[in-house]
Length: 265
Ligand code: CTP
Ligand code: MG
Image (cartoon, rainbow, N blue to C red):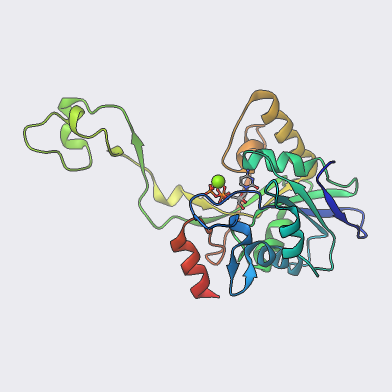
């Protein structure tokens, strides 16, 4: 493939490949550089993530998705890492970046982890637990944490006047609910979700290679978009197993997240 740079290395038969997604721009973080190049205690985010993947002992090679135009900066950021690394230009959406990376899987790869560089501190133990939970029977594994906040389902539909007391939020006296709420999300109290049944999903997510490749083929053919890879696999009707996630594997999205990440290092 054009725009890919390979650092050769030996792969065992039945290898596990990690796709490290780092091709985003980091719009919500608002740094001058792509998010994965931002430093935490002097180390680029993408390097912290790659080092943790290899430290897990279960990852044989890593394919990094790179923002178009930043190949040199990314190879420099991962310079000196001895294990096999491949760099590929990402696409418009995360899903497109991963589709590009999937075309580079080596024949001997039978398990794939997909991991966001935006979660650089996902600990090696979590990475190993996800990979080891993928077996001949269990084809998709994701880490999930119990949810601490109450989560409500919102709707943008106008409130029916007779249900006005059921809407969350302040309604100015004498105004009609339908006319006063549309600027903010509204929710029906009855739609509060059962928190015990909810999980906040993290990466890495682990898959049987064929299952993940089929899920992406299906997504491309049907125009399906999902916010994570397990969503695409679930669309095939394949069960997804959730294992305990890690509070350390926080996602860096906003400047506040970055400040917290810098404090914790
Ligand atoms: N990603 C990618 N290719 C894209 C978009 C995102 O590889 N076209 C990666 C990001 O680099 C990140 C992960 O997917 O590691 C999760 O995405 P997110 O946290 O949304 O990062 P960004 O898209 O960079 O941030 P933002 O949405 O704020 O622009
Ligand atoms: Mg994004």
